[in-house]
Image (cartoon, rainbow, N blue to C red; front, side, top):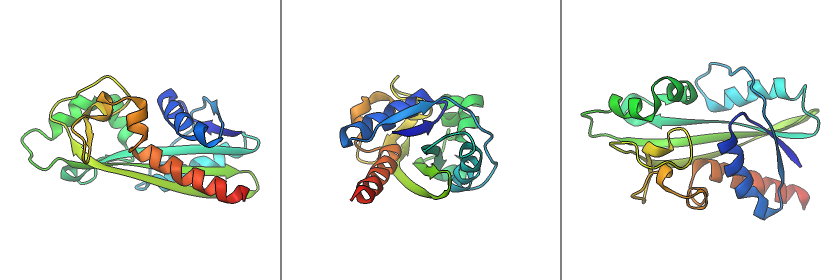
Length: 185
């Protein structure tokens, strides 16, 4: 059992659904921790790991994710959670009003930690574009405005199963699962 430390029930639902069929069980610990203001997602999770390791027995998982919009120089990136709370998906779409360039990518970084052992970091990315208007009510965060490459629908219009087949978080979970299977031997 791995303790997934997150205040976001949507993240827990997605990661659990991806890992459960592989025999990897997660328990959720609903705990907030201060986020380091840094330029890289990896720096944020490494800082948080030092705090979480003091409180959680055994293996734990923490993550940070961001939406990086090309036309905005990668903004909101590591500040995605704050931008979501202050502007929301519709506000981010307004920032792109009149721009043709709508390329974006979602990134997730997982950190698997265990007191006394070096942490392991796993990444996942999903390329796509920003929709002209928010669409769909599924998922969470910026899902209603992100259209993955090769799709016509936003993550917000997809089922959990559809999103988990291609998302950034699912790709990070696959990398984590690969590591855990190799470790088990």
